[in-house]
Image 1 (cartoon, rainbow, N blue to C red):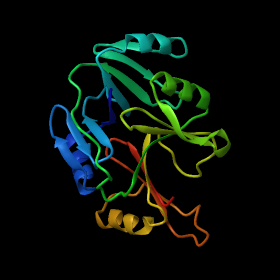
Image 2: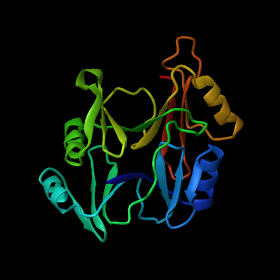
Image 3: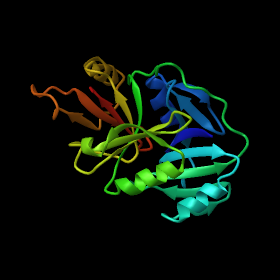
Image 4: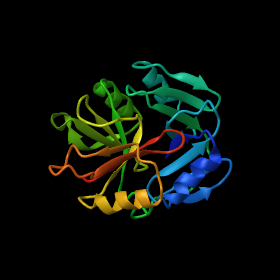
Length: 229
């Protein structure tokens, strides 16, 4: 199985400019358009029916789709199946033998810092975890007492499911997360220097009221948490 993050684009050129500014590599410019920071792989799609989410690719999803239909709605599409978990993130199960040939690097190379996977916020944590488990994601971090649980699949795609009222800031489902271990201020300055619009400046976690966490969005609305954790 291969995994890729899907982000919609109103204008493909604008989205490519956004990602190249952030030092993402353009792996494929057309059909499909794929960019990567070495850890995260994103397919940018200008089709107006595209929604933010993930695509999971393998030759056959029939058995797993049937299992998912017992707990949630699953739609048959031309090349596989479509569903969403409880946060509303769309999950495309694509049936193909033509699977992307790319491998993650040791570290992410973008100016955003250290990639930490996808974050979701939902009131339906149990359903999200059931869906991800059926899709062969395994728990690798967190627990209910902490208010978050991280799941990961064999392709090293990590998804953190956040419980309600855990995040005192704007939240777009899904969002990519970058954790920079107390060294986020230079990262934020780089973002400013590149004239990347900041959606929210966050001071909530800093006793001195310093902006040490920010949220940005790509031109299609996909969110990025660049945090100091």
